Length: 265
Ligand code: 15L
Image (cartoon, rainbow, N blue to C red; front, side):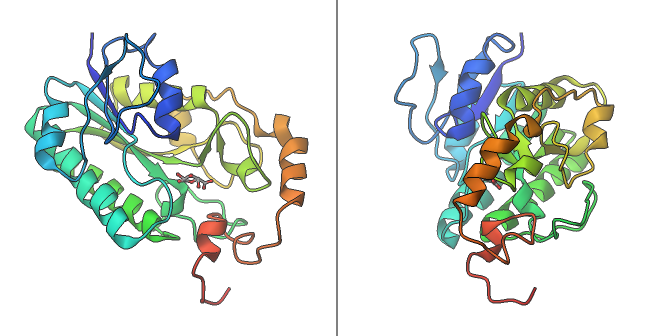
C-alpha cells in the first residue's frame, strides 16, 4: 500500500481532498504549517514549514508519492510568495529526491498562463504568460518539476488548476471549473499511470467553454464528470453582480491580470 503525503492539508483543496482520498489511499499523511482544526482521530498529520528543508525532509520519510498542494494560493507580497512557493517548492522537490520519493503531483495554476486572451485556445506547451507574482511562482514550480524529472527520475505531474470547487462561481469559472472528484482522478493519474515522466495537464472538468486543449489528460485516461454548463444560470447570475473589469474580462487570468495593471491591452 503506497504512502501518500499531501501538503496544504488545511487549505481549500486539502480540506476537500482529505475526505475523498482515504478510500483510495488509506495510508495518507497530511501536512501543513498548522494542523487542520477538525482533524479526525483516524487522520495522520505532521506539521512542516515548507521554507524549512529539514522539516520538509522529515515529512517525506518513507513516502512513495506526494500531492503538493501546500504554499500561498493567491497573489500576495513577494516575500510570502518567495518563502512558500519558491523556496518551499524547491525544498519539496529536493526533500523528495533525498528521501527517494517516486512521484510528485505539483499544484500549478491557470495563473501561470493567465495573460493569454480568452479567445486564444492554448495547449500545455505554450510559453508561460504569468499574470502575477503567484503565477510566476507556479511557472517556477513547473520548471523545478521538469528538472527533477529529467535529472533525478522523479515522475512529475503538474496540474494547472483552474478553479476548484463544488460549482463554477461566475462567467470566467464556467471555462475553468474543476470539480473535486475530477481532481482526484487527475491525482490518481499522476500517482499511478505507468507512462508518466513529466507531464503538464490542465486541472479542469468537462467545460464546454474551456480555453484549454487538455487532450494529453484524456490520453492518460482522464474522464471528467463535472459539467460547468449544468451551473450556467447560477454562474451568470453571480457574474451580473460583479462590476465590469475590462482587463480581467479580456484575459484568462481574470482579476489577477487587472490587479496592479498599468500596461496596455
Ligand atoms: C488559483 O490558482 C487560486 O488558487 C484560486 O484561489 C483561484 O483564484 C483560482 O486560481 C482562479 O483562477 O479562479
